[in-house]
Length: 160
Image 1: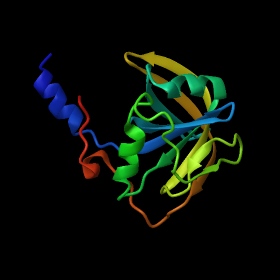
Image 2: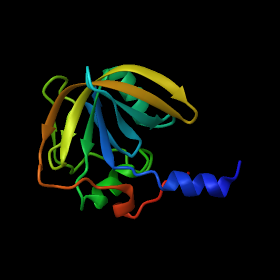
Image 3: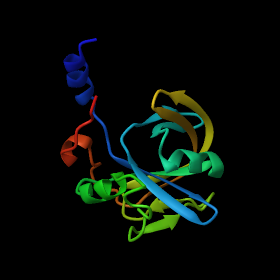
Image 4: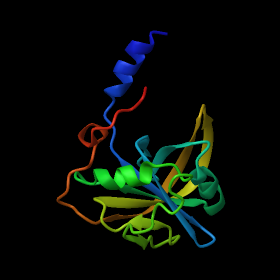
């Protein structure tokens, strides 16, 4: 494989920046994700990719619910804060304004563009990540005038 060509092409895939949140037994956790996509209209579903070594994937399996908050343009610092590993920052949601989602009480970001609350219905190994399919059970809009934060706007690069 031509690694340079692969990196060039994959780095041009447009990606938003999202915060995946989860809560289990009173512990709340969040992480920055960019591999998030709508997967179905009816019922509404999204798919997310979560690193196999992250704390998040085990918590989603235990909780059976997760939230995805869409970051607004200008929230790069928040994406960076929640993008650090849990080993470096074990309480990443500390100081971040969240609220409980209606169905599962999973935390979602109160200052994001908007959010969805999902019931995890399937997962699939995908190399160094796990794909999680979630049925959207609730959604909210916090800042309807905002534009979404993209990987490109944030000045971050997908490694490809």
